[in-house]
Image 1: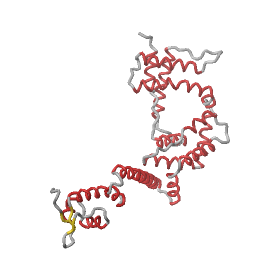
Image 2: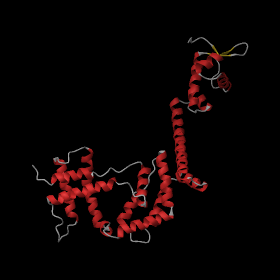
Image 3: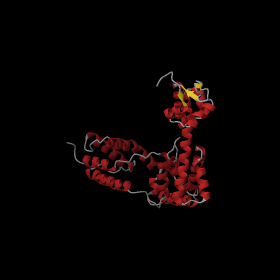
Image 4: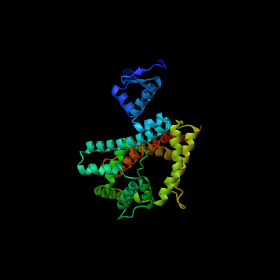
Length: 330
């Protein structure tokens, strides 16, 4: 392309991919003016003007406004500044689109009424404080009217949804369902009955007692060591596997120990029995959530909203480590 040559508007349109009317419009709007005009009034453009028109087309495709483009072409704003502004606008648009998609998906899933659609739109737009208040009100009602174990209540309240700054459509959909779940008075009553029965009948009082919860907390670092070893594919019959098995048995035999009772003796038979219990735990852990349990659904939705799943406990790995540790060291 000759730097000194002037091009008619038709040539300019072909070179830039713009229509003739668009090139004419940008000239009349003062965005890119022609380099010259013929005696008959026809516009002529030089190479510099064509390059500017190509930039205009690109920026327009990125939804830049004419005033913004004029500022860039005049040197009053940089392309970086323009891109920064539009990235922020795009983020807002994406957030709105995700919210709309979540509401529409919920409508399709449950054949919602107009009132429900209005509610779902409100739920998506809730602030962090409003979400926290909804969850706090939920647990206040669920734990009212019975002597819920204080430590367990703290744990239940701590498991709460925390939407990220830029949630996915799936996270928003999970939040809509969760918000509807915790707002349902029948669900609140059903969960109160479920948790009350779990904590107050059978082994519930002992398992939810402070001494037992303290014991469970003591096992946390041992369980994490097993999780790490399983993830790193450490052989269960290795020295590290035996060390973790010994720590687990040391904790387990001391759980029921008292000043008068030494607890369960550490024997090969007890280790093999514990290994079998670990395999049973693996089957229990692999079972799908109980569809009849409001608590299971609540926790499932919290995990989906937060976008993070707790690392699974390595029941099988620990079972093999315990079984290997039952044999005398070589």
